[in-house]
Length: 227
Ligand code: PGA
Image (tube, rainbow, N blue to C red; front, side):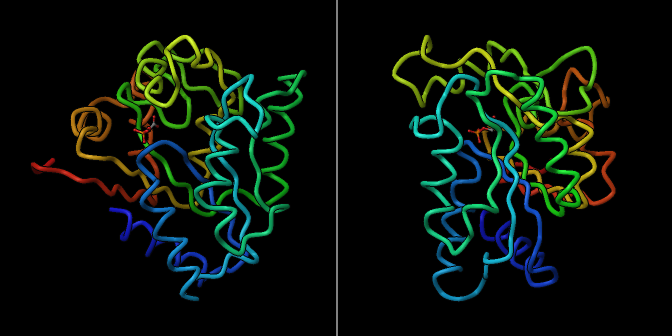
């Protein structure tokens, strides 16, 4: 899964060296980032002109916090490849003015010319980024109350469930859908929700379901059975 996704990213960067990559965090893309680090070390991919835009960040965690997505990206990718730090963009989970921070991010994505290729994982509840199941799709970057299922799932990274932030900032659905290419990655343990997202109704109750409307969606999954 990671090798196939890495090949698509390499192809994207070869076609457009100054690509804007939308990046995801969590367990699923770890193998992809490892692969990209190896390929960069072997001179197979050059990140010197690439910009990255991350999907989401916990509220209340500084980039130095080990469970922040800023820390995750630095540790797993940015510090290990030849990307310029100034070209890596994340939401500021410590922003005092959340509305201004969300607007800054939307404006930033626009000013960079949009996202060329967005990597997505999928939550057990069907979330993409931190767009949790809801009655409506949210368009732009916003502050979201994390779903109980997400807090429980992500507590594996923290000492206790009480330490998991209750809120996060996330790119909205419109921004994700405006990416020119989407790559949705799903481990074998996401088969059920992936099937629901791809073959069930398109509904904000399963946020990933909207991906099937995208013109250039690639789903890469590990699957024990055909879906
Ligand atoms: P995971 O998270 O890759 O850690 O399973 C995916 C997600 O919640 O979007």
